[in-house]
View 1 (spheres, helix red, strand yellow):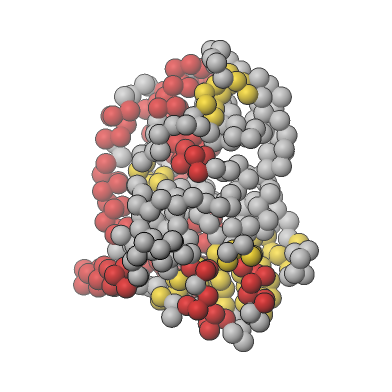
View 2: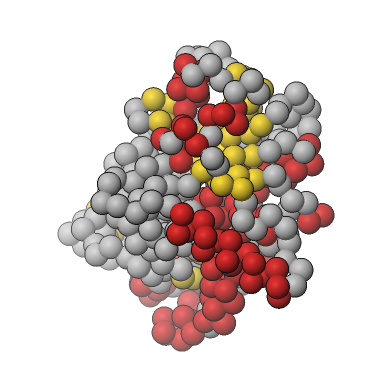
Length: 397
């Protein structure tokens, strides 16, 4: 059977916190461990199909919502489940829209199911859109980074479901950046859709664990509690090596890009290109005014990058394709760019940079050329406090 949320109420006392921790550990110990391949929650239909039979079901998903090679919606329909509509996050139901591009609601050409965009006129499902719905299945591949918006979509789906008293099932998936926790913790003044919660840039949790934290920390409006179940991964730990077979968004095409994304995404708040409009986004970075190197690229319009930064301009830059796998939030590249271009030129969009960083301190530290070791020390207290919160909701070792 599916796992109920182990942290389904806001924290109220020390005894409750102890119980939450015990419950999380019991769930962790109940998951079979072997040398077999990792199984996503969606793959284990026997754990959740009975919850859907005879119900009017909504699926929140995109191109990563699959069982084997088949889309989740197609598979559930074949099993006789009544999918009344689908909700899609940023990048759309088939995952081809640009970052930040408004996505309109539509109809899925294959199934005829109405698709309601949660990255268009509204980011939170309306009560009208949920009318008649009896259960919601959430199945989206996350990458474990605060400014990757799928966790914000999860928040709003849980909040709307709690208001409508509709249960939510999260079909859990591995976090390819789940092997570490790092970066500054979001300050409340910088809350936005690219950072809604008091977590570091890299938080080291699966989306199922994260959903439990949203519930347990009382982050939903008015301290609402969502009726949440998590279908756990099998044969997974946070140190598991896992290669995504489907790109979670158009510009995260490879394992290397996903690993570099937390660190290179800071450039999105600067004049420097991270390779959108090339075949290797988030594996490279550059600018026309960087000194000439043995590597250059020219961003061009393409699917997922219709009007990329520095379009049609030759960028001198750096190719990180064969870099060592990161286990930390790396500031080396943004510090290097500041030396090459100067702060006034680099930080043309300081407001967006601060939203990505989750504070206004990091940009000033970089401008003042504070050593990276000192910058890291400024995160230590926030990270230590977050680790204590995180531990309560972990399902996996």
